[in-house]
Length: 335
Image (tube, rainbow, N blue to C red; front, side, top):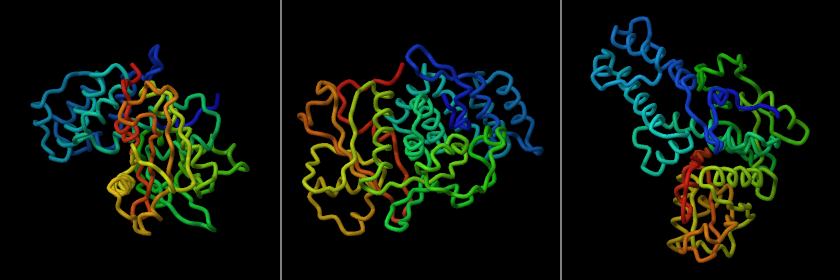
């Protein structure tokens, strides 16, 4: 099997009998290697002592008093967030269970960066045996915002951070360890260059065509089906639609903030403006393989999924909506 997304840190995890990801000391140390947590030369003794303790014993219990002793306010806040996140992970058997509990109860002050990194890791596990670069590229939408653009009649999604030439500080310290180059040119993924994805997967420099009726949205449908199956132990079929005509929104899930707004408007019988219509990237029909898995409130009707870009033409998908918004009778995480 070909490897991909090395920068997510999946090589630092173990799997349990149910294929869930187990947290390891090595994975915790990868978080500690982040530039935001490494004490600078001017750091106080309390912060240096805390860091050294955790790097030696990543699961060591840390008290609020130890964090309060840190002199720098920004550093205190970073450590409060990190320790709260670490403790949440350690309270659960798998990373999947930790993520599902987090999104069901409310993410609170958990930084979006940490959520995206969790999804990155889990999706790497979900798609471990996937050999289709198009599905893998579509799955990047789960954890990386995309800049949308129309080019010669095609709707193209490119990694927002990559095209913006974002900060020189990588999201993951593993990117530096792997020597992944920055500033690479963007290519649209196609049959002709798909084999290059494996070597470029951690550079996020291949765009995807999400034009209605083409393979990109079908690949995203497949990624979403795998996500639901892995996280909720429910078999579903998800297929993209080419238009919104005659759609009965008995139940719908907005896959991002803009899409949720559009779904709410349709539910209330409001007419969509042309601007709102043009922001819709994809509409999908989800059906349950086993009717018993679906809640009684949908009465055999399909669930519709809506995906849209924001007014600034950025797609910020919220994969947690797919887990918390489905009418599943007995939703369970991988345990």
